[in-house]
Length: 165
Image (cartoon, rainbow, N blue to C red; front, side, top):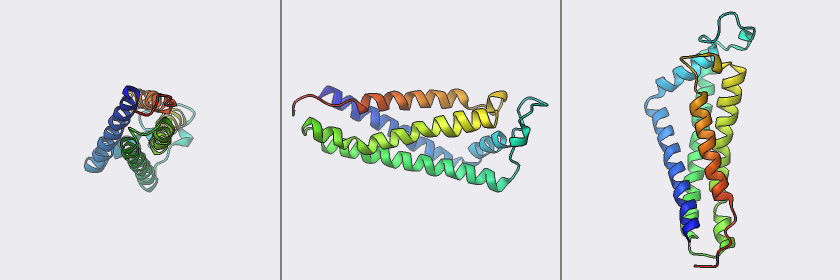
């Protein structure tokens, strides 16, 4: 039962984190929009770098990128909370039923980890050379969240072999 409670608690903690991320992006829209805008414009990268052809100057594209991140975070959050509910409902059931209850949570964790890896570390960090910026560099935070989400995913994904409580 201890491992099941740990899986539930870690998933709920991650769901809470993503809830706060979405809340912040919606209630302080412009702060994070500015981050996305500057990364896409590459206006704080090294002078004279040879990848400036990748820069995007269109406010419409900036908005589309940012809104897609918020939607991605909303879907991740919803999947995590639905997974928490499913896990709680099956907390005292047999191992196979509890393991099946983790499906939505694992989908949310996979979606969240993929966001940090693809949107922030790969696209922002490498394609738009975010790593070159001292001001608009979110790679440390993205790496931290990729690791946190990934570790929780690995713990929760473990099969539950204990007998029915």
